[in-house]
Image (cartoon, rainbow, N blue to C red; front, side, top):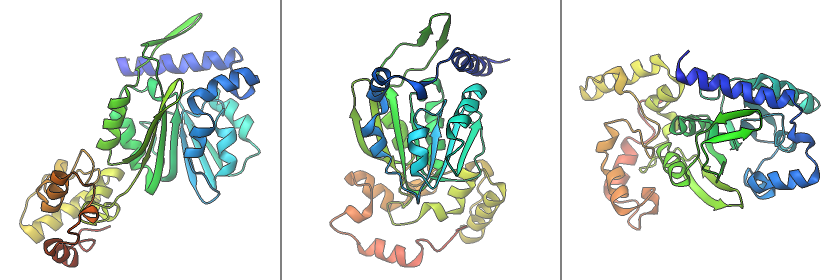
Length: 307
């Protein structure tokens, strides 16, 4: 068993242990509930903007402390947690709420086979070592225009001590979280603090600087879906249209405004112009649309290499 598997098993044992010993935050008394609200109370829940028309995913659903409040507000709700015993308890709490799916598994490894309008998590990312990967995956699972809302603990201790059981954690640093959000291609709309937490509200906007809809791009879709057939489609497109032989491993892009961009898109003059001017979109430029962009949009934007 390697280090990552060992850490994962320790985490499962930790939360299974809490479940076996009656730790169920759904039944917290008012004083303890008020204490927990300092991480994810009313302000946090309001930021989710849930409606019956929306789907939601909770990363680290636990026994359902937040889900029992959020799931009834959604058209469909999915919760995932690494601890099988906490999921079993959550199923009991949420059994009377329709359109709820609960998954015992590792968020980073699980194939959800769908996307969501809202993804949120509270007091869970401290258990995730590969934080950049986690934020990128959350972004990939969002529908265009969707929200990612994250609450991270201010505590910078590298372990949790629960009497007879002690477990290592990976403290979240707010500036690093903000960097990861930008790298994933999400747009940070808000960052604020509560007494115990840093809260981030980010939105997915798949339109690139020039107006191209990245969600329709075969390279973006190949990356998000890990789809070799779309990679081959993209390779054939660039060979036929531009005479460029591109290795399959270079067919990678998390969106034109993310930190992992298809290398040919790094040459894009509209992207580079916007970055130099400190703009998140050509649309924000006082010269929009410049003659060059107008011509480019007419000829190319949302017309080639689409799914």
